[in-house]
Length: 80
Image (cartoon, rainbow, N blue to C red; front, side, top):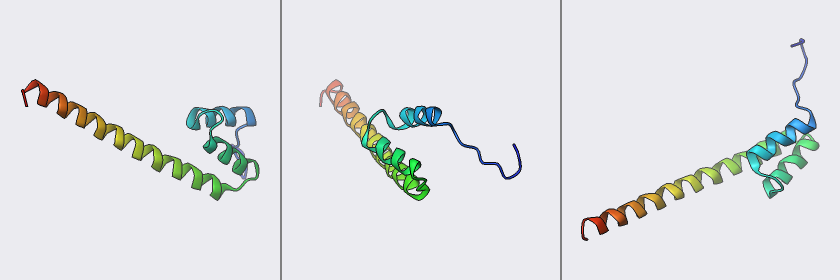
């Protein structure tokens, strides 16, 4: 890399990475793309951080749901 050079993805590959991370035509995708286009990096970080927290909460909820279902199945199997 050249001294002082900045690495940037071209628009095609940037959008491709965003679709993989955020899904196509989602509200988060539009918000991030608008922020990237206007180079509002703090806004990009804010949206991505919010999405990460929501994903984590969703994963925790799915885990708890699976544990409840497993517990109910175990109770049925044991005759409770």
